[in-house]
Image (cartoon, rainbow, N blue to C red; front, side, top):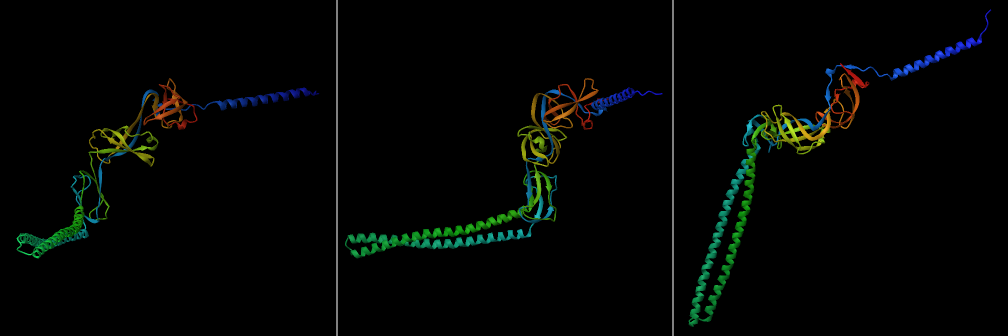
Length: 417
């Protein structure tokens, strides 16, 4: 018969519990170890990566922008008065002088006004001549009367002298002498008044003539204005240069102020660049610049900075100080590079595909064999068009991957093959 052994059953239960706990512990340790294991480093073709070496030395900070060549001096020609374009004499691209006629316009109303102004001037001139003749006649009559009184006064004074000699010889009475003196005094007074009247008449005549001449001058001014307006119907360039644009066509009616054409002087050009707003803060007046016309490079200096940004860029004018290369012309597309500053003895490298100045970014640094790249944190400093300063995280001679590495964000290292 079987003998019951309860202690044996307890030992078996304890063993099962111990083996179960050990299995659980092994599973937990294994899971923790697996969790701590890094994923296998991906393998990347090295020839597809952009790799650069960290350097130490002078770093040139530059900013770049695209733009166009524009004339330093250009002239927009607008209509001085209304009219209709009857002929386009010159087309864009023509070389013009200041007197070159670009457009011919007509205005019948203006022509009639000019003719009326001319007629008014002729009538006013004739009226002035008639008035001057009338006033001259009146003045001559007055001068003749004044001359007659002067003669009578001279005769009376001679009579007084004769009567005084006769009176001294007691040949005439006192009354006769007194009467002759009285007559002489009266004539002297009349002659004095006549002289004053003659002076006043001259002044009045001058005033009338001056008033009529002022009216005539006004009519002359109006006639000259109409004549100038008629002359302006033949639209001229105004300056020597190249005709850039003709904004109207034959048969078109225009109002005063309408833009008709544009003339530019091609020998005095400047570059108008569009600099990214984030880089424009470092641009200053007088900084050196290089303008690439794709047919040569010309030196220049920053001469104007637009205070406002438009569509993420700032307009910067560069005055060209070197000789223009062949083919340079207005509206030519150019690339401009402005020198901001030179940083002596700094660590720098080419600008990576990501990261901005002053940021900390993760870059892959190659080992000595060049087959493994480890992710390191790099602090970036001041930037240029193609290079950027390294503040920390790298040393001189380190090779780093500058390509976009977003697809490897989950890895701390990669292998190069």
